[in-house]
Length: 433
Ligand SMILES: *Cc1c(COP(=O)(O)O)cnc(C)c1O
Image (cartoon, rainbow, N blue to C red):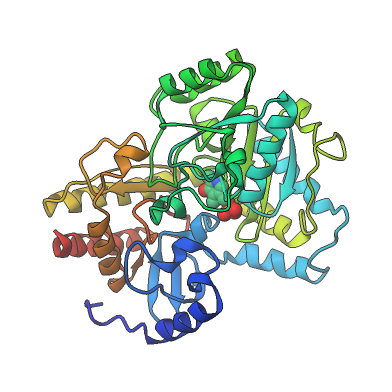
């Protein structure tokens, strides 16, 4: 596809109308393409590694609905299981055996999880886990890291990642100072800063929450000893360690980042992959802590649609597909080949780049490396990334419309898809160099 061949007239018309109906024309901010320029593409359908827009253009997709599509979009086995469940109704608001099934799968897979509660989104899971941290410890403060995103609950909208980072927004208006005064922040990969916060706030910090591998400030990996150090520091200070694995769960490995790195938190939040493309979140951990959650205990948290049969079915099917032999080796190989090719292509065009991948997650920054925290990530050339994004779209590749979001591969991305993607990168890097 040549540069001017991309006809997006229907996308433009639909998005024009959308902007009159919904703030910014979208249901979630980053989708609006504000940070990369140009107009967003309006999708018509998705299948495997591909997305088709309303003008009939096909894109190789590296967003995967922001994570859930790890088996490829609309996997036939997921769809057929959903069709079967659909016949029995979409929501019970009563116990449903499928909840037991998915709960058991999550407990078997994720080392820290002995009991789990299902909710409807990652945001909900993180909101609830924060309340649980405070309920269990009787302390109000929490430590989070700059550039990490834990959904849009009030207490987490402090130096947050994802859309907040993408759009360069200050901390959100509407969040009471009295709320965020309990949120302490530290740079990622900086144990000393965490140590100081504990020293300055004795017996006041309920715990530390983090993305064990950061995907909402681009892609940042934990330095050796960082996760282990947090495990020790929290234990020493009577605080909880919480891994927000909404993005990394069932993606970094079947048991998440905690399995991959061998560091076991007290509590874990999940979302994205465990819903297999339907709205699901979950939080879980040690049984002793989860026993605080109503109605087993006094900490209130509820949800009308939580644990509905459709979402449970999509999750169960997706995890069944993922736990097959060789899945993560394949994801790792696909992603490594992609990332190596991207770095090589950029270097050949004389561009500064640094990047890495783990399993089915990758990212790169257009700057000299290394990038160990959000401050360093902000050194990346975001204008140039915007041009790269547009050029890749014109060549049929859909990257996350932000320099500060990780990329995702899936089991459906074939060698040929990666080859085509790398060819597009080669041409696009040459154009923007
Ligand atoms: C996406 C994400 C969330 C929020 O999940 P939603 O389902 O979008 O509410 C929370 N934490 C992390 C690490 C995420 O990547």
